[in-house]
Image: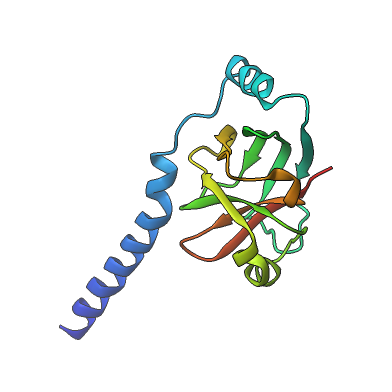
Length: 156
């Protein structure tokens, strides 16, 4: 009987944990098509800043990574590339470049959350009018649910 209860609890834990991770992947929005991507990039405007997400960040690993080009303008931020799937991703602008969880946690209060990442490739997010993008040096994708660094890009 104890083995049955233990097995039931273990199975329930594994199922719940797997569901928390897999459900966002199954319900993720489709990425932008090439036409939609071009339309979004046209809305960024002439005063844009750009950066690169890389799999080679210090705290990136085979399950937490991003790779591609990010373009930031006063009204929108557009990503062309792919990030590892996972739950509860948020995109932040940060006042300085970070590539570790500890570094981001240290400056999270000075950072601004732009929005939820609902697609794992080619996405765009609107930037609130109240955000002065010149005050931020980098972009980071962060898993809010698990406090996990995914990737970052320094803006030029």
